[in-house]
Every structure is written in C-alpha cells, then in structure tokens.
Image (cartoon, rainbow, N blue to C red; front, side, top):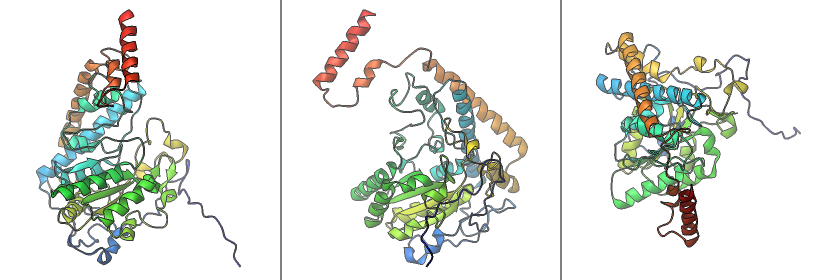
Length: 412
C-alpha cells in the first residue's frame, strides 16, 4: 500500500532561476465563446477554466468578446492607466525619500481597475482592495486628495486615522479600504442585497487578491451571493503572489479561482487581466447579468504583480528579478497602446507626449498636496479630531480626556 503524503505547493521559480510560467493554462485570443447573460451556470462551467482574451499577438481585437469600443474611449482608458502608473511611480519615490510612510503600487494590474471602472456605472458601489487606485482615477477623484491621505495632512480624507493608501470616497461610491483582508467581499454582497430589496438596478463590485480567497469571509460572501442571487461582481485578482507566497498555496495549483463560482452555483469567468478589452467585456457581461436578475459572477483576473507587494517588501528574496519582463500576457499599457497604433489611432510620439503630460500633472498635484502639510512640516491635523466621528454622544471618559488635552495644549 502506498503511504499517504503531504503535498506542498511548489514555487515555480526562485531567485537566480529563469522565470517559469509553464504552469499557466492559456488560450488563443478569440477562442472562448461568449454566452448570453441569462445562460444557466451548468451550461457554461467551462468559462471558469478557459481564458477570455480579445487582443491577439498582432495587437488586433478578435473573437466574440470584443466589446467594439470606439478609439476615443480606448484612448481615455489608456490615459487613465498611464496616469495611474505615473501616480504610482511618483508615490513610490516619495516613500523612498521619506516623504510618506508606506505605499503599494499596482504595476501590471492597471487594466483590472481602469477597464472595470469604465465598464460600470457611476452609481454602482465599489468595494476595492488596496491595488485598485485606478478606480479613483476613472471616477475623477483629484490626485491631490489621494496624496493628502498618504501624507495624513490637514486635507486627509481619513483625518489621520487610516494607514496610507486606504482611501474612501462616499460621493464617488467607493467604500473604505480595510487592512483586514477580504472584509469587503461580504460587505459588497450585503450592499447588493440591499440594492435589490430597494428595487434599484445598481450593482456592487468588489476586489480581493487570490491569497485572500483563503479567508473565511470569501466563502461567506460566495454563499450569500449565490443563495440570494445578489447583484454583485466578485473579482479575484490573481497576480500570482500573496506577498511572498505563490498562488498555489491559496488553491490555484489544482483549479482556477473562477472554478469556485460554479461550485457555489454562480457564474465563473477567467479573463486575461492584462487585456483591457477582455476585462472591459467580461465586466459588462457580468454587470448586465446582475442587473437583469440572473445572479452574481466571480471573475478571476489572470495578471502579474509587477512590483513589490508594498514598500515593506523585497520580491528579490523570493522570485526572479526579471520575472515581470517575461510574463507571457505582457504589460496592459503596452498592449492597449499597440492596439491603438494598429488601428491607426495612436503613435509612439503621441504616447510619449501623453506620458510627459501625466508626469507633469502628478508633479503639480504633489506640489499642491504638500502645502496642506507633510509628515515633518506644518500645517498639522488638529489632535481633537480623534474624539469625533466615533460616538453619537461622547462618553464621559472621552469628554474628560478631551478636556485634559485642551488644558495641556493651553499651558504650552
């Protein structure tokens, strides 16, 4: 009899080794069928294992998932992705210079946030993770506001109470980011259930990394979404790494993350997360499915985290340095740029000019943001803000502490 054994998922390439992406199950662009939005889950289980792709190796949009966006809209998408990347680059440098305490880039994942943000309505409620800053760009939040939150200055939307990058925007229908992983999944489902009870046609969308799918909140959300057919899109951004842990440890070695959808009785789609057109198309499909009462969809975005997990992380300690350059699905910005060039609607010269414009915009925004205070320079947040926005009626012990603070500051 063969003895039992414990299986340990394998990291496919380590520092100093050649990047190995042979484990990926890919498909040619245009090869995946597009079902009607009212198709039964049992009749489209294959979509959870296939890969929706639109832009082929020749930069042409092909196949049934082609959303046929007009060139001006594609140019807007490219602009949003480039602004997101320029913002990321600048904030990374500012953290390294000691101007901010922490940052997380979305290098390589810009299409996930930007394409999905553009495919959804402004009234749809978004519950992001910490790598979807492109959603704020799409919905028009000034970069100054995001920068002020990173600086915890006098215009910090969170009033100094949140870790940098954990933005929120009530008027823009973007829920607060949480440092406790996966809490946004059941929150999004609950919001979607409430929207259905109210009789609106607004939906919720939420994002987690593939590592977070190992959290209990993931399964709670999946169960409630499927049982009550909540109008919600549940996005799993499979960027291959949960900090230093390869995606196989979250269950991606044996089956796709999208395959968990049919297991719960909901539609599951697996999409090329670096293909702007494919991400846009599957999001529109899932949104219309939800709006028309056909239930939720889980979307797995196959992408790659091009940078470190955060400014506290050194990826060179657990993966090859040149892995992102060898990622077989390419770079989302370059792919959309080349598609527009193939259409005759863009050029390298226009691209360089736009990149310069985006950099200048980010620099100007930073210069404005620091006028509201920095980590080391005034003006500073009023310390008394810590007593606000917690209790409707302040308890006596907090009233006493606030009075003590005022007395102490009066003596100085």
